[in-house]
Structure formats: structure tokens, C-alpha cells
Image (cartoon, rainbow over all chains, first blue to last red):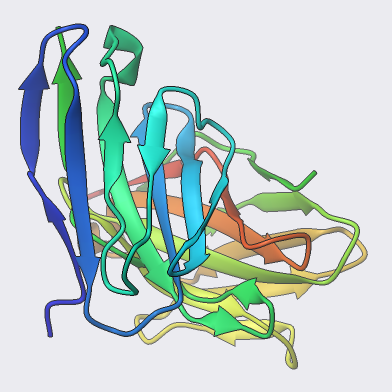
Length: 115
Length: 113
């Protein structure tokens, strides 16, 4: 079972460059989300989706875009990278559990450095 | 808005000693509560969860947590820790306010020989 797959695992960008972090899950989960992890701050929710064609903002959405054209894929786009976006990014998926997210299944993370 | 507070950023403890990692949450509605563990350079994985029913939940590797609604707490305990328990532990809450799981800042458990 692949679970949640994220690519790339590591990326270095220059300020102003754009890129897309890929996320795919093979568990037929309705819910998918992106978090960033920074020291001392835990995980903060960037964007999430409750199904194909439906996305919404989390706690820290500025500078990021998402789309959900299929159940399996949920890419995260950085439009113009800034040093403040240096972080470890995690994609997570879950079943819709009576109108709430249940257990989250995480990818292995993508470490992004913006110079 | 939901929030999760983990009261200790680091907890050093000797092997075979008991440990408690504290977690408090704020929410005005019913919640699902989770503890996740993150080993170095890995993603997070579920340790245990409270959805409903018994307020005491257990994991397969000896951890337990008790949901206390009146104190809005979900503290994690283990009676005897091992070196292999060294990791970062995150408390998280999901409620009916929307499809958002909110995490605490994490507690780094360091088990010493």
C-alpha cells in the first residue's frame, strides 16, 4: 500500500520562483490537506479539500494555491516563493467521519528551502 | 476557534520511568481528539484517538490517554518508557466546526538510558 505519496522530498528555490508540491493518495479518501511544520509551532493548516472540486483555506493560506481535480491528487502551488516559506510540508488525507476529519494519514514530507 | 495547547515543549525522562505529556484544547462543541507521533525525519503517524465512548483510550505500545471534558484535557501517559519512545508527540483536535484538524506545538520526549 502506497498510502500518501509526496514529491519531491527536497527542493531548493530562489526567491520569486514558483513550484508545485505533488500529493497523491490511493485510499479513496474524501478529505485531503496540506500542513507546514516549523520548529516550535507544530503543524499549521494551509489549505484543505473535502472532495474533488472543493477547496478551502486553513490557518496560513497566503502565498499558496491548491486545486482538486481528482479524488487522488491535491497539489500545492507556491506562486512566488519567499524565504518565510522555508519549511517542511506535509500532505495528509482522511475519511469524512460523520462531518469531521478522522485519523489523518500523512506523507513523508517535502523539505523546501527558499534562498 | 479551536486551539490546542501542549504545556511542555520538551520532556526528558529516564528509561523505565513514567511519563505524562499534557494537552489542553479549547472548543465549544464535541470533539475528536488524537495523539500523533513523529520519529526523526519521518511523517506523523497516529498513536491513539478518542472519537466517542470510553474516555480512556490505549495504544498498542503501552501509551494511554484520558479524555476529560470538564477540564478540556487529553493527557498522554505511559507507565514505563523505552529509549525507542524518543520522538515528538503532537496532540490534535477535530470538531464539527469544519473539516480542520488543529495541532498543538508538539512535545519532544527524550528518553535517557
